[in-house]
Image (cartoon, rainbow, N blue to C red):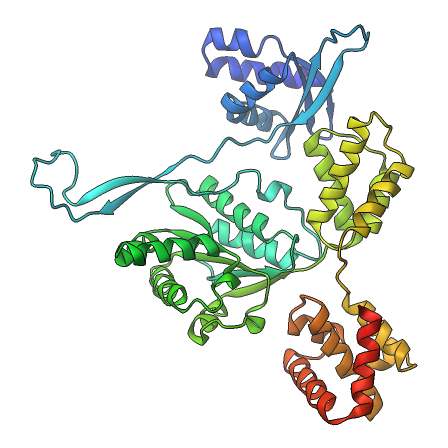
Length: 474
């Protein structure tokens, strides 16, 4: 017997009926109609947006279990909201929204020792000196591994994140430092690890916090003379996620307190996850003892996604928003917006908004208009490939010669200039610059930058090279 939408939904209903009250089943499940089944995604028709929201809030886990029994782990659910049009149009208005498959993150409970000066009689069922508090994980359940798509640009960081989520504190990736430019998914990945840990280990206490907020809390604790309480609170966390750790630069007091918290967590097998827009080797004004601890575990870089990954990201975004757009338009957007994922998704959102608000069909022409405005309004970061090409053209050689092992003086100088400008105009790490410019290490790049600075002061001709090339890049 072939599997159809009707047969799958019929079997799901049998399971659901056994697990909820008859009245709830009658109200929320009998009105649903199965529509189609394609690639393990079951589309069901519901009568209103409120109906869809109620199902997602109260019955999403039950639906997920029922569907997984029928279609396996890769099962997906899509709601088709069909509302009869009251404005004279014959066609009813329909909207397709995929199920998020998860509810909100629940608050976490934790027993915290307290020093009570209150002589009143205590509750005999409460352990003396222990207070139970609720901690919000501050995780966003929408940032999960399901919608963090894998590509060459993020494979190492994503795989390491999955390993940490499967065994927090039990891998050699502690701390896990994820670094990369803006809009490449650092915060998304940090949340995804936390969300996955809460799914697998609900009893673990996970806390996500930005380095800026951590600093504000520390300053507040110093003002109120509660510094020890602040340290003690953070030492109780099982999985601590700190976003934008480069923000601690120059803040010696906060670095000192974080040093003690980090040591305690690490020694007690707790997991620390950090994100930064710089590699540890490029961080300025961070104490050496902290930097060396950042390097203890794994530092994984997120790079700009390649063309195939950009297409997958756009298709996934459109699927989650319940929107269908022709492939040639998706390909056009992916081809022209290369800088980062945030801008890529921003462009597709602008395209959908232009189409729906102005009642225009999504065409290549409309995509061109949106992308043109988007790219023009974006201060584009110069790529390392582009820098190598400009420098090679300026010195009348090809890029292969620039990257070669030759020690001829004019080629070495051209290579050093390419490294100097790559450090100046991109957010790439020294190691990344070195690997792209002739497979050198980060020490070579550091040496190149120092040499260029020295020659700029002592050699007039070399100073002219720098000025000419700077004009080409600006």
